[in-house]
Amino acid sequence: MLILISPAKTLDFKGKAITKDYTLPQFLPESEELVKLLKKKSARQIAQMMKINPKLAQLNYERFQEWHLPFSDKNAQESLLMFKGEVYNGLQAETFSGAELNYSQKVLRILSGLYGILRPLDLIQPYRLEMGVKWNTRKWKSLSKFWDQKITDNVKGEIEHTENPLLVNLASREYFDVINTSRLQCRMITPIFKEYHNGAYLFMTAYGKKARGLMARYIIQKQITNPDEMKLFDEDGYYFNDNLSEGDNWVFTRG
Image 1 (tube, rainbow, N blue to C red):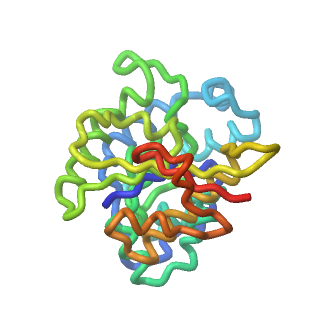
Image 2: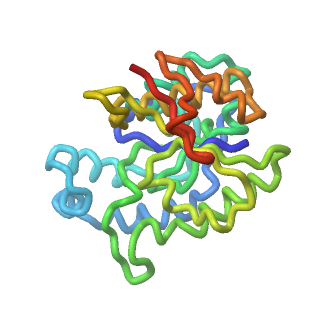
């Protein structure tokens, strides 16, 4: 089983590694290639490209200027413990035991605009670069085009080496669409979380993001290998709704 989640814009960088079992991202040469181009951009150009305010643009200009290899436990931090935001509020990785962190390293992957795909204990330096950013260069038409084959090959290779070839998609569409799923020879389950509001079940972004993190936590803590066990998920009042589910698009509702 492989679980995919999105990164977060909000970061909590402690300035160094938190564990002793950290690893390095698999696509650091590609990340360095991107950062070399980003270092040439002014704060104003970053603001225009990312559609962010001047203060955020200045922060990320400085981040790109300071970004450097090699990564070490003195200048980088584990990805799972740096990302914050709704998904990570649900995941609560900071409360994982050592065994749970190690298990997450096996089954959880974070898609990233700068690093491609990350394991939980991969060291990263702070950044902001969303997969959907409009970035056209001589070599590629968009950031997703830069990454699509690399990430697809990586996910395909990982799934082929698992006992249970199953992909659980808890990522946003912006990130998951970078993967060419037609090349994956495995079952794909997409949990969808909806709230009852004004007589109908609706996806509400903040709640839905947190629920994705809750589901990832649930799978990791229970070390689920049989996907049907995911239907027993009942965190924060959600329950599996068979009537609204279609195929492997599994809907969980509350309210």
